[in-house]
Image (cartoon, rainbow, N blue to C red; front, side, top):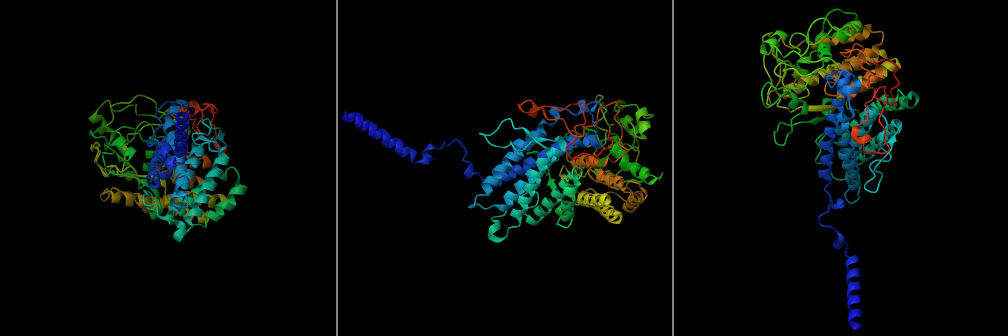
Length: 563
């Protein structure tokens, strides 16, 4: 009996002793979140954010005829649920959930990392805004609730997600306004702004302005006072304040710009992908400006030799390299092109070798001759040739060796936003000034970026900036709808940022001279993307959209027909 009592006493002493020692109950193989390195998680959030942005912009820019839409002849076959699975995963699994963790850890009074909190909220706000802009209603209110939360979150209405994002930006500015010891330790691992709190504040203001400009289409009464107040705030207004993700040149780990890797292969002449013929034609001829101004004189955009790199100086030279390299039959445009007043078709000289909108035909052996991304923003080569007999296929290491950027929020975008607001308000003179500022800033910054990569043009190659600016202002003065000119210039300046181009296209209906799809009757233009397969297949509360409907997002009330 004594032995039993002794054994029970020892057992109870062990149990109570063990229960009082929390450390004895911790699994050494499990990470303790409270001891996680906030800087490392923040660094992961920023890297994942760049992946999200890349996936988002490249998903929608083909709809805007920037890169060519080549996945099919119809919108529903060229833009599939599977194609945006990565975008969705980057958003929820990588950026948003880890940004929530950063906020939780950095808000600890013992850490007091206010810059970390602010940056996490700003990046989260951008992701939420972009998800709504691309998909419409998305999970937010019931999302990110942890292991004990809802694994099948219902979609939140886009308007409410926008309001949530704006609230995140407001909260971020509160953190950034703190000074001295209240501000806490600096964010040392900041690949965007190097921990500069003033620049993060300017970005938060600019992103909110962008949000309200979209929201204004839905509720101008609510949005207009917000827009007016933000126009007086500190915004992304200078080149130093540009919000860009910067790529490097390393091979291991891979750090080159993803577009560069597509067009500059380790084996020379193995470029892949297609730039839209329409976009290149627009920059080479200024067709949209001619239509808006009534002019018949071509006006070359001084940026095209930085945006694009032609591997050949003429179509004849391409056929000399490989007679089978042409995947289409040049000649008279199809009837639907003629009806739309769009003359560019197949390829065009001097040596522009892209693809038409909705060309879903197979791939010819055109890697050594197709037109490639240039130095801006992908970090490739500037186009420095005039000779029709030129042939210079690309290879990894050429040009800026892939040290490109993602132009996420550029200072000239701010000027175009201001111009749009003022045109809508009837301030034509003010809009004209902002339009000119935006165009000049874009041209200057593209040239500056190219020069920083050692990519400058020889004399006589580059077209005149002054001639181009005069043509833009002439078109603005002559245009009946002056917003068409503002939207057209934002579109041209948005190379590398399909998100801003897609939003502007739906807000304004411009540019209005977009190339039709190659085949007639392509189905409705996607005014929002279909939901990802990974969302509708794994979430019991999710349902796919009608593939044969436009599916507008909440703020897209523009009645203009977009093809």
